[in-house]
Image (cartoon, rainbow, N blue to C red; front, top):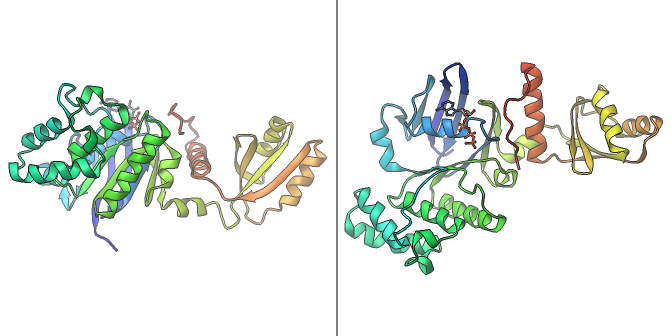
Length: 323
Ligand SMILES: Nc1ncnc2c1ncn2[C@@H]1O[C@H](COP(=O)(O)OP(=O)(O)OP(=O)(O)O)[C@@H](O)[C@H]1O
């Protein structure tokens, strides 16, 4: 198994009485695309800031490349790259000038920059834009620029905080293709997202909500948690009535609308869907369809959030939606 390059143990950060990150533990291995998935306000940025040594943990510890993330930042920084949510670039510099500027600021030797800049422009498909001023670049291109800057010093780990926030689907896909290329070259990617389709593309995921890790594993493993048969998808008319009935029956631990259907997590994998159908019929519902399906990551996430809320008996704090 590949070496562990990021490790968090009970990482916790409080702001006054508010706990933004609550005893979070995970490991990231070299070459992985590790996704940190959670809605707005879940604690993703705060976790990254602790891993980067920008924020001190209130409790717990983290190690990056074997060094203490809080005390040994000087040894870590030259080996990692970071693209923050609110990175800023100089609008009056061209793409190539920007790379030269940051390369010099990082203290990279001129000869290394002469090799590195054309290679990055090529790899990030920026060669055609090299003379363009940053201020004339569209969002997706700016994001590539930010990636190129963060890659100048050949980092072993890239920390990316919602690198595709606000982008159109095509630009998002292109950024993800780049992340794959980087991972194939052995760069470890630690990426936060609230997009489910992006989470699907990660080698491993940690799901975070209200500062707590709800689960971690590969997308496949997380979906397998529902049990061997998966979950039950139900449609019926009227759908709202079916929802209220299903929610009150003891067969399911979590019931949620999913477009024009209802997705329900069975308490018992031996549940008979014929029985559910019969009960819906007896209740006078029409156009009934009941079947086993594989859950999506969104199903898994909503189920885990619901479970955590039930355990804590607290309403969910985070208003942010996952897409
Ligand atoms: N310096 C701070 N002082 C007080 N509260 C903070 C501070 N930084 C973050 N928080 C709070 O901690 C919680 C987690 O924030 P964080 O930015 O880590 O979430 P996130 O998952 O990255 O979400 P987003 O995608 O919106 O950035 C939020 O409720 C936020 O308001």
